[in-house]
Structure formats: structure tokens, C-alpha cells
Length: 548
Image 1 (cartoon, one colour):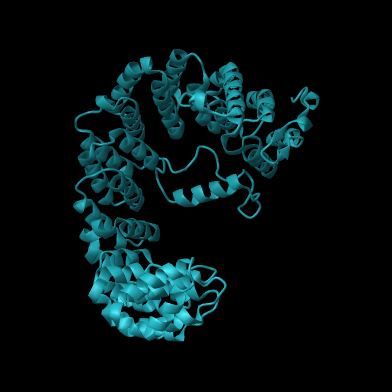
Image 2 (cartoon, rainbow, N blue to C red):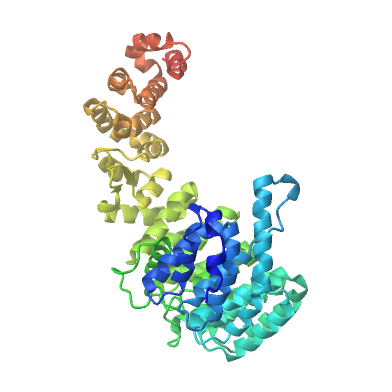
């Protein structure tokens, strides 16, 4: 293995972080018996040699050695190397406009083209991996063939044949996904692939496989979806919830390097991403369901009523993870398509009382982003805010604060039931930025806060962090047009530090402008600032002086 690797002039080439003379060590690391060394090597390949999908000359030089590794059954974790080759050779340049790329981009495009040609030329090796003993290899090989091999009809025939023999659930889903990819890349195959998927959906097979076929059907031939797609999907989800034989792992291969505990695993970007993935999917019976449903929703596209019905069913599911996924997908649907979402929003609001913290927080975050559209969930938000004072204000490690998501959502609705949370926010050393807009939405309902806002201004230390302490307070007083606070605002205007005080002075000037004639005590100060011609503050002061 690695014959001729020393004959390559690696030092004359570069990758994302400098000379490529470290690439031979990375390649050898991929074949190491030490899981930690393999993890570091793979991280280095993605981080430097194939940085953010780029292809360098050294990337091209790696391709023959990567194929050697894939073909050797004694090399561990070959599925990772198959994925790396798929990424290197699978760049799609079809959308690039050759007339609009510069010289550097042209060189990069040439590298991508050479990589695609080199990996496609060796893609036949992936056929032998479809039945490999390592399930991780079998999981990666189907997409590699669909993305890279130049005989799509042969690939489709082998995918169908392999599906009949494969017993690993996730690998079966990968075979179906690869067939969908073929149909998208090679449109003449779309009809036969759609017919096959339709038969899989109608067969009394495993619900996960049928759902995968339905999702890929929506992806490559949405016109062929059954007319009763909503009850079909909800029925399959119900079967997945109750099936005692449902898969329990998130991957066909371990998330951590084999034999390594979490403490011993190398600190790499890929390792951290895998740890996050493991945390996200822990406890889920069929974690791949979320990906299948996202694919299905993408295929349904503007069929909003059907998508709402699917999400509503998920939000009523006894499985909290299906509800987590539904909340996240609802965010994408509501933000991307017009529709009638009152019932969907109400169901999202019901999730605020869920004992699973990720579900409740996901629902609160979605509602906070909906502003007025969150109205059907107002009562649920108010109950959540009243029940959990600890969530009113969140504090970052550096001392900055923000309103909790539920309190933010309630404030954006202009609901006075958020007043206790806003009052609590005023007690923190650094006031959340959401305070000002929240008071603005509440309008006169926030007038009980005026005294506390004035007190906060009168006590503020006016140093380089003063804006973080009282900037939102000034915005809130301006929204209330609380002219009685003019003396406190004038104190801030006069005491703002020369260095870094521009934002603070601007906020104070805008508050005085909002007060109008009630800020008459500030006239001399405003006239003095107007004379500082050529500054932003002079313009702000002129506006305030006119308003006063």
C-alpha cells in the first residue's frame, strides 16, 4: 500500500493551510489501527486537503491512494473514506457560468473537473462494496455509485438487487436514497425509479423502507405521489412508533471511534460534530425519520394544506421526538410559504408544557420568531412565562443577557402578561436588548415600568459598557414617550464617555426627540451639540431640538 507516495512532490503543492508535505502522514493515518489517529487524519483531510469542499492539486494527488485504502478490507472505517472520495469527485459544476469566472475560479473549476473524472474512472470499485461485511461501507457505497459512476442503468439494477438481500435497515434506506439521486441526475431513469418506489410504498414491507420510498418519490417524481399521501404517511409514522423491531441506532457504525471513551476521543471538528449528532439522536427509536420527512416536505413544496396536516399529526404524536422534528419543520414551512397556520401554531404552543426541554425550547424559539403570527399560542406562552421565572432572562458567560424565548414571543405579541419578565430584566447588570422592542409592542400597557426605567438610568455607571447597561432602557423610554424621564436621559447624554459613547449619545438624543416639548430642559445641551457640525450627533441633536 502507498507505493510511490514518496515520489510525489508534496512539498511543491499547497492545501488550505500551507505546504502539503504533511499529506502522506494524513493518508497513512487513515489506515492506522489507532482510532484516535484515524479520526485526526480524517479531520485533517477535510480541514486542509479538502477544505470546505475545495480541490487542490494535492487533493488530486491523494485520489489513487484513497482508492487503495477503500479496496483493502483490512483498513478500518473505510466507509468514511468512501464518503471522502464521494465528496471530492461529486462537485457539480453544471450551474457555473464559464463567462463570469475569473482566473482563480477557472483553475478551481479545472481541479473539480479533474477530480470528478479521476474518481469516476475508479468508481467501479464501489460495486464490490455493496455487499461488504462492514455495514458502514455498505452505507456509504450506494450514494458513491449514484453520484459518480457513469453507467446509471447498471447502478440502478444493482441497487434494486442489493435491496432484496440487504438486512440492515439504514443501509436499505441508503439504497433507496441513492436510487432517488440517480433519478435526479439522469432524468430518463426517473420513470422506472418512480414506478419502483410506488411499488415499494404499496408493498406490505417495513414502514421505514416504505416511508423512505415515499420521500424519494416526492423528491424525484412528486406528480406520482398517491392522492392519499397524508393518511399514508401518518399511518407509517404510527407503525414506526409502535414497532418493537424499530432500529435503535443512529448510524450503522459507531459515533465514537471504536474502543475510545468520550474522554479519550481526539478533539477534532468531526469528532465534535459526531458528539452533537449523538446527543441529538440519543433515545430516538428511528432518528432517520426526521431526514425522510424533511425530504418529503421538500417534495411536497407548495402543497401547504397537506404539509400542515402532516405536521399537525406529528405534533399530536405521543413520541416527543416526532414533535421536536415537527416544530422545526413548521418553522421552515411558515417562514417559506403563505398559508393558514392558526391551528399549527396552537399545536406548537401546546409543546411549551412538554417535559422534554428541547421540545419546549424549540417551540418557544419558533413562536418568538413568528411575532404576530404567534397569537393563537398567546395563552400557552403566558402560562409558560408565569410558570418558569428562571427562564425570563438568560445570561451569557460574558454577562450579556437576553430574554427567554417564551418571554420574547409574548412581548412581541404586545401581551401585558410579560411585564413581570421585563421587570426582572431591569434587575440585571446588563439589560437584554429585547427590552426596548418589547416595551414598544406593549405601548401604554408598559407604563407601569416607567418608574423602574427612570431609576435604572439615574443609577447607571456611565463608562465604556454603559450602552449595554442602559441602551435598551433608553429605547424603552422613547417608545413610552415618557417625558418625565428627560432629566435622567439628559444625565446620560452629558455623562457619556468620549471614547465609545457615540451609540449611547445617539440613543439618548432619540429618546429626547420622542419626548418632544416635555424635554425642554435639554434645549441648551441640544443647541451646543448642533454646533458640532459635520457629526452624526449634530444631525441627531438638530432633529431632537426641532421635536422639543
